Image (cartoon, rainbow, N blue to C red; front, top):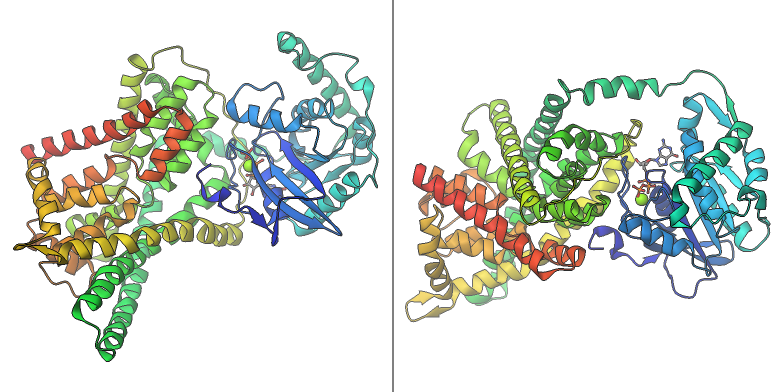
Length: 636
Ligand SMILES: Nc1nc2c(ncn2[C@@H]2O[C@H](COP(=O)(O)OP(=O)(O)OP(=O)(O)O)[C@@H](O)[C@H]2O)c(=O)[nH]1
Ligand SMILES: [Mg+2]
């Protein structure tokens, strides 16, 4: 899986090879498996309040007392009789005979429904621990579960946990240790199954009813009611947030608010960072002069690598550091499934699946994650539609570029407040346009290349949860913001060096860069852009973050820009090089509608297994971008 989650294969300083025991975490979707996994192993699996975040297993390791344990986090699954690709991943793990302990994590506030899966797991292994997770919500919902009674009925240890509490994670560690080392003995309760073959797919309906009846019977013995039920709050809030009248307007307002806070908040730190980099630049120039470095070397390091790097950090870091944590808070609150719910009727009309709303929301963070996330859509055709259109959502590599161009060409007002509102408004309109384009292309695909029956939309709306504010902000900053920034920096260094070399190596009278930009220029001008912009998009294929710095560097080889991260200077540089309002609009359009970055292309190839669909995902948005730019440049 090409997400930030799996880059770490080591946890707690020990490699996962040759561990004493193998532990696997399994359960229904959105019950807290990855939260427990992260707490056990110190890893950074994606967590959030909606179903289907984990779509491929993740592995980490931990030490408990004197023993080492490899721990696997599985995708959420409702049944071991698998239907979707991620359920198949889980099933294959659960039937392995080298698993020493299966930790079944369940949402204790909906015990009865979760027990069917528990019974299926216990039919293949008796070495298990049952975690009655989200126990805090269970209490709030007005009932308690008798752990001892449940343990007797199932034959395995049962513990109530709140995965966000350290002390409860310790309880889980203890139980895992006890079961693996056989300090606690599990026993098989044969009467649970009465000799039925629960994996017989032909008897699926019959078996489901059988397991449901068993679960009901066990629950009646173990659940004790007490106090008021507060899931009413969720119902009340849903009446507003998913209502036909207020649902969509609130969604758009929230998106606008998110962009507004990002635009306003990013402004000041961007400026501060830019000033800081200017100071450092002065120091660097002094050092190079002190050692009498040749101009070529000085230019290569300072104007080439350092300038690009500074732009990427000063302009990208602040918006990402604000946008990602805010987005993570909304995700933790449980709003994303409501977006999917609100958009379902539109997607349904377009022959696509409602869950595409979720994968699109993930695409705003990173298209590669959005594409992998499409696995939550069961139907292969609808999954393919969502996969090839995910790139229409501008990822965080493209957002800073959009914000910069909108700020310098459209915000215009002297009043900071009015200007930030107009930036947010334009961004919202752009996203709405991208969503409409996604639906339009989905519709065309659903009646042509990917026609067929539309599958039913079933997505669980989880209860709203109070987000863990500090933890979410810190972890999304460290895991998402710094990860994306790190990737951008890694690409920016060679990109800066390459552009500087191209701009400063001359053949006859022209630099290599001029030859390249001259080559693209006629095509660029025909669609309202120029050779430099086209080249920047082409060279930005490894990471979109580098498009604007490449444009700056290319123009810089003829102009002079002192304060590279200042919007006024940038505006001056662009207009000196022939940019008009039309150029800005066409560049913005091209930024949204062009081929996906290399990481996303690789992910599409991996997910679809088809070179043809990968090529389609590259050519289709690029053709749309070219057509739109052509139209705009000829109309304006
Ligand atoms: N209040 C509360 N929230 C919890 C608890 N455990 C997990 N959460 C939250 O529940 C949400 C879901 O947790 P995840 O760990 O992502 O769930 P998951 O089972 O891995 O989900 P999938 O990968 O989608 O199947 C997150 O927002 C967690 O912060 C708990 O015990 N109490
Ligand atoms: Mg998970």
